[in-house]
Image: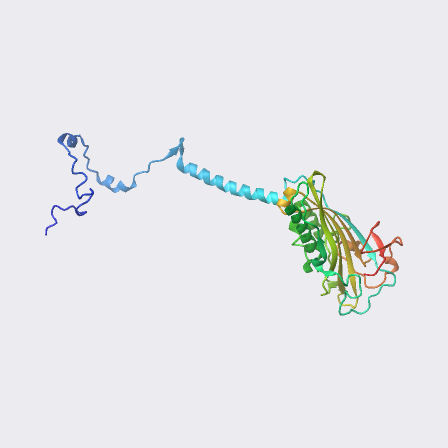
Length: 349
């Protein structure tokens, strides 16, 4: 069968009933004469596929330009948002609490005149006041998560947890005890106080701002090793709202460590009694941050020397005359009321 009369596309193209969709259109002579028939030249045929596109504009501005500007704005918004969130996390601009350096009050306690520990026993904690205490953070009792006038029970609980985390990160972290940086605790402080602690670790000074031992418990690893006996702890962490929506968290904790000389027979139980005064508010809690107003530290047995600002220096025997405190007052390290920066231990650790 011949294919004459059948269009190349096949039959039934166009209409739904098999009819040509243009069959009803009549091109009369007038239409044909009015048509502008033009045979394209070779150059026109060559460039037929490269005709310039029609440029689209919005309010007189090229669409391509608008797209470029929009892309740049998106990038700027992303960068600006990240910067804002970082600044909020670091500085808590919405907080009403005035930022200032933490005040570090430190008291060294020399041992009693006849103090001597003898050979290292199997359990270094046995026979001391802390023998029956819980190990580590288990000995720290956290107060009730009770709502206050302007803080929910959840916010109060968050503040208590942040303080407990800070205490653990500065007093019970084995890496910190051996001279390492308190990496877990640093992010919990407002930026200015984070810088204060960082600067103290880099350039320690014997004052109430730049003494690392005013913040953290640490021993010089070249001279002192912390024994495997787990530190004992007892203390409380409580929260209360003060004026101007200031949420104050107080931690009062006594810790006892077993330490020994590096390359020597000496050992001792070392007591660190700290009282922290933390402040926070709703914006700071939102960012998971704390501010320290004051830390009182009573530690011993150790000599009363400026070197105690950088490291604690445990003493393993009774004091020499040079180590004697300037006044004969005795202080109980477990229940201190320190009036000075140096005193004598009233009881052995």
